[in-house]
Image (cartoon, rainbow, N blue to C red; front, side, top):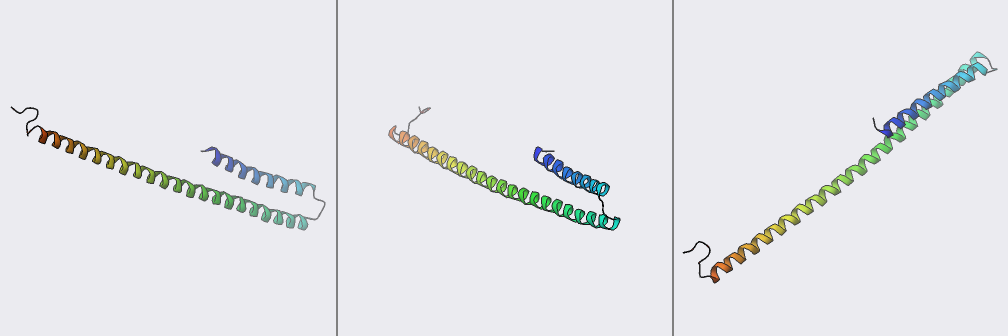
Length: 118
């Protein structure tokens, strides 16, 4: 598990635990009636659910942004790699053509005699 994922999991667990601990403390210390306490818990539960939902939603949005940035960077690196390969191929072809031309000129200058002629 990566550090970021672990950190997010720890945060969510802490958020949930903190919400539950706060609700329990409110129940134990509440001077109001059971009906009022249940309503308070319901409201707190809804708020906690909303916070968890928003935290997960924000985390997902950040993950998607990072994924998009990573994809764009990979595509850029692939394009750079293609350019390097094409440039290298062109240089090799140019060099091979120059070697062939030089060999042909040497062959013609020597009257068609070269190494091994004899």
